Image 1 (cartoon, rainbow, N blue to C red):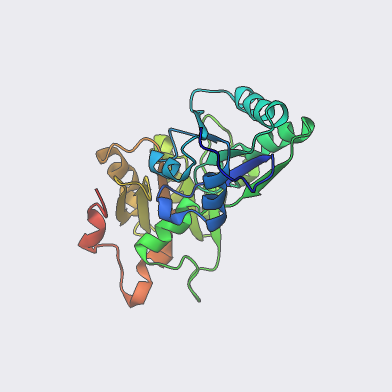
Image 2 (image 1 turned 90 degrees about the vertical axis):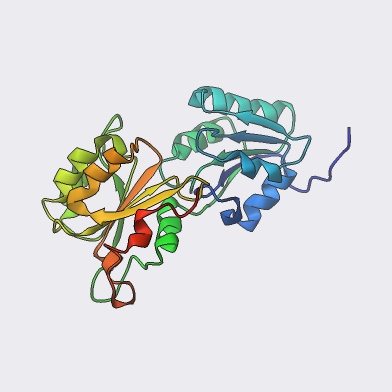
Length: 258
């Protein structure tokens, strides 16, 4: 078998793959993928195109159907017993909704060296697609990243209604299945015509972006049959770009790609 120079150390690298577009990987992420012996990737969330950056002889292991304990056991075995370098590839940025805290705890307990490499999050990629700044002077200066309670409860102090009271640029993750409830809570504080960007699979070939008034957020989600991998940006900044509202711009009622 052809051998490849490997300049990275034997360790686990927890790497953010970004929202889906391989071109949005950091240079460091590309380097690690091109050199690692083993790649563990969340196959339901990370496009396979990103794996084209890996060594042809790398061991590539999908993990969508594995438990956290099984994943960590694999990492420990490959690094400790086989002395291999390993990339644990997450979608987006590892600091957001990635269960990375539990993985780091278990790796530390097993005395396995690890490093975290950040990635671009969906809210950043979506803002770029929309050509908006989410912090506009004299309009909004705060960004809130959150989710609504579902199978995973949020702390009572972070309940969506209380966060909506700030009327900040609010980025709502992991909430498509509970969107009617989310809309009702948001409408308690945001005006009904506040623009909402509904962003499905940002960075993927079949991405969709819709911009609608807040009071149509749930209806649009249901019409588009969006269940998962959907980010919502609720923000007055969406109607402030270049002094013109994008709310009824027909460009945003069509697929960007696909």
